[in-house]
Amino acid sequence: MRPQECIPASLIMEKKLTIQLMKIVADTTVDGPGWRTSVYCAGCRHACQGCHNPETWPFTAGQCVSIDEIMEELRYAEGDITFSGGDPMYQPEAFTELARRIREELHKGIWCYTGFRYEQVAADPMMSRMLPYLDVLVDGPFIEAKKSLDLLFRGSSNQRLIDVQKSLKAGKVVEFEYDPYPTFD
Ligand code: SF4
Image (cartoon, rainbow, N blue to C red; front, side):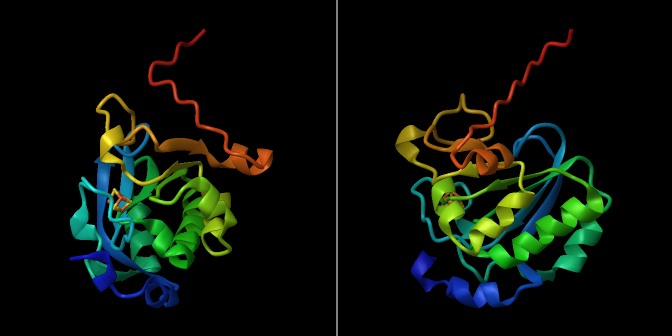
């Protein structure tokens, strides 16, 4: 389905306490460090050529699930949480509320994937509300010409792992420094 055939994002955003959900995947290691649980949503208009999840593009894909139900599942999840899709930033109010509850009730860290650039998210009055609850934003569209299998937790080299809290404090993008092989003194 072409993105323009989807329900307008504004209609999805009205459902503040529900998320158009594709699936929740436990015990994954590909969406951030360590064993994590990933929340995959429906809805994306970036239409990246070579996207691995085009079935998530329609805003009507998956099912409408309450944040309460998602929280019940995450309550027993191992590790930190990742938001992916689709693009969670097309459901900013619902994901902001989910992020707030994960932080306050479960005390888990959160990574979020988006096809928007960090600068776009930070400048948007709706999307930017999610930032205070995120550890890392993996930003930018997937660009097939910049695809590399050597990249950790991202598909193309234009995408950045952004340390959100440091970026908010500095007022500019600060990339996340991840060492997969740390040494201990
Ligand atoms: S942002 Fe992600 S889900 Fe959306 S089209 Fe691009 S790769 Fe696919």
